[in-house]
Length: 80
Image (cartoon, rainbow, N blue to C red; front, top):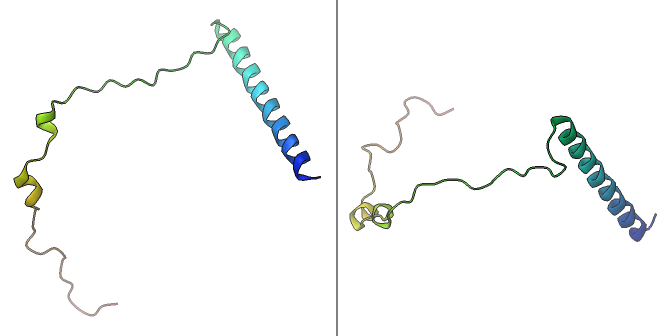
């Protein structure tokens, strides 16, 4: 099969797959008693508004990093 034939086959397969999915959705909606159009869930998310003053980092916060007494624990004994 040549490249064009392969692409045509893949496109046809995709179309049949989409049609099958639409039919399944339509059948499910009929069983559930809803309309023929499937409902699309909302993607809107509610986030509280944060005032710009509380979202900014001060200069002192930017310059000072937390420093631990020993950044890495010491190992005793032979290293394996």
